[in-house]
Image (cartoon, rainbow, N blue to C red; front, side):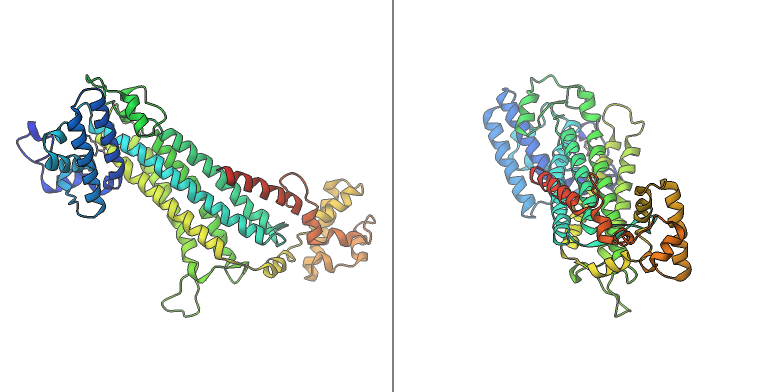
Length: 458
Ligand code: ARG
């Protein structure tokens, strides 16, 4: 018999019971549910709504329920429908009438969203930590490979040489923004709906500020209808997870490419690779691929939640029960992805010689040769055309710009001199890009210092 069955003469069928139950999902929120109930009971006693000894029985009874869940003894039963009734039912079975007073002035509507907000806050904190750990792993690879030069790409075509550290720090920058979004999502979740009751508030003299403070919420939601209906905070969390997963999928796509024979820029450690059941030689970047793949599911979680909320009238509707699955999945998936990516990045072997060998292909110095002419007075557009001809000449001969003779250069423009050799040097090209945020090693070192400082305060 459900705790609400007073006005019913018939139970729902077994399938309907299963269909309507959220227990398989929201049992993950038992810690928050019990904390919420303890705070509510203590406030009821402080306000003289229940007697002190009832509160004491509730407090220790709830501790026992928690212990029994944690020891694995607790018998979860789908007939309890959700974690709220599972905990309350067990409490009443164990302490009787005192337990039956717990739900005074409360509804599952404010209870469920209180639990969800507490859960979201805790998940944000864990995700912020995982985000920092991944940033630290990227930064230590950047630091260990300070001088490594690689081809930078646009359109996946060789463009200009960059420092590998510069490339990694671009991911650190994305992750720093992700951290900001997670922090904002935590702030959004950090408001107490408890005391809104079913939708309209309650006739009991509840102290909503007391329960908010006891639960660590920094503010109280000011409209009881909004309190039970708002799931924006979960959208913020799942959006933050989606964007961060998307960033990880970009990183992982590069790790996959870089570990091909064609690139050969890195080798993933065995601990982050798998073999093939048929091809004995294979070493596959499965985990990087999986992070890329799981990103699709997390974005799906965001779309699912957006669609659940679309056109939902006030106040609580059972549709809202679908909110937790998406949020729990998105947060858990991102945390796992961050941890896995951090391990993968920390343990990969970087191959500077292959990166350099690739950087020597594809005429990466072309922009700098054009700049050489422009700095000697030729309008840049003309210089661009001159170097275009030189590149065409190289393509016809199957050589690089560095293989052309001074005479070849001078045949295109008499502004060329012996010092053109400097414009062709990849390291000099990198070091010359000293604009703020550029790839010169001084600028990359500055980025690194700034990223370190942010990591320390995050
Ligand atoms: N299991 C529900 C949820 O997760 C809790 C509250 C439902 N309230 C109700 N009156 N059906 O949203």
